[in-house]
Amino acid sequence: MTQQKAICHHEFGRPLEVLRLEDVKQAEPQVGEVRVRLLAATINPSDYGMIAGSYGRLRELPAVAGREGVGVVEAIGRGVTRVGVGARVRFPEAGAWQETACMPAANLLLVPADVPIEQAAFSFINPPTAYCLLQKMVDLAPGSWVVQNAGNSTVGLAVIQMAKTMGFKTISQVRRGELIAPLKALGADHVVIEGSGWAKQLKELTGGEPIQLALNSIGGESASDQIKALGEGGTQVTFGGMVGDLVRFPTRFLIFNDVRLVGFWWDQWCQKAGSQGLNQVMSAVYGMMRDGTLKLPVEATYSFAEYEAAIKHDQQPRLGKVLLKP
Ligand SMILES: NC(=O)c1ccc[n+]([C@@H]2O[C@H](COP(=O)([O-])OP(=O)(O)OC[C@H]3O[C@@H](n4cnc5c(N)ncnc54)[C@H](OP(=O)(O)O)[C@@H]3O)[C@@H](O)[C@H]2O)c1
Image (cartoon, rainbow, N blue to C red; front, side, top):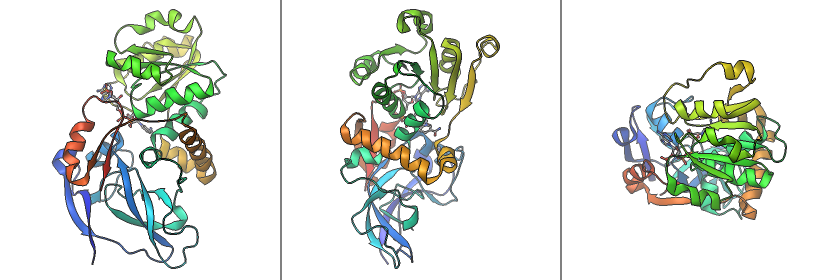
């Protein structure tokens, strides 16, 4: 029986309190299945939600943590013809922070071999979310203005780069002045500091043009500032809640400005759009990763044995993803 390392939790709670690096049994691929070996996994805010038991979809305990990673097919079960050994794929969703996992070959998401491994590792959640936020929520004409908070998050960096390619203009809210220059270098039109009263300078920022789309992954004051800044008929899409604070704003914006407030969840979007919708979005993302119009930074890489240091690093101010490699 082959053993392998996995970062597991037996109860819901804070990651540094409940996670353990354990030896678990390596599975053999059954009929129609493949075994995938992890190349690199990501740490995402939603991993913390799943570990804490507060996310929209939870695993049965005990569970292997981690939702996102890229791997390579290393063994195939009987009857598998769709892929061969060596194919690069999304690591099985049933816990990406482990060395290998098995899954039905029919459900594999294939990754083009010419996409760099570090980019592929975080290609499955944040870039497609950014793409859908810009392309699937409202019809934006070229030149439209988009405002977003957490401009330095991975979704935020993808929004900046994709918006540039798609011909939209962006205002990105951030918490630290040192982020202004790097975000502008990636193509941000304006970068503003949270809580600085930036919305009062809206006319100067957009030249009087309305903001049609606001992207909110924070909540609280940051989200209400966006609602007040939206132009008539504008839409705010909430897709994250990094701060649990309530969003308070005068209801006049709904009545007199016809502002719309909606939500987005990638997992649910995938279920509704089916494999055709998913493939369209992923091929657009991989197209941009291949031609370099989308390049997301890696902040640091840690081994499984260093997972506590990786999580501590992830929870510090940063610009880029923290990766885990077995
Ligand atoms: N609905 C969906 O389908 C979906 C899909 C993907 C992502 N998301 C959400 O999108 C957001 C970004 O995800 P990500 O993986 O791109 O993030 P990330 O790269 O891990 O970056 C985290 C971001 O959150 C900011 N942040 C953290 N705590 C904050 C606080 N208390 N107040 C204000 N800002 C705070 C950080 O700013 P600092 O650098 O200033 O700390 C940073 O910009 C998360 O909320 C995530 O859950 C949702």
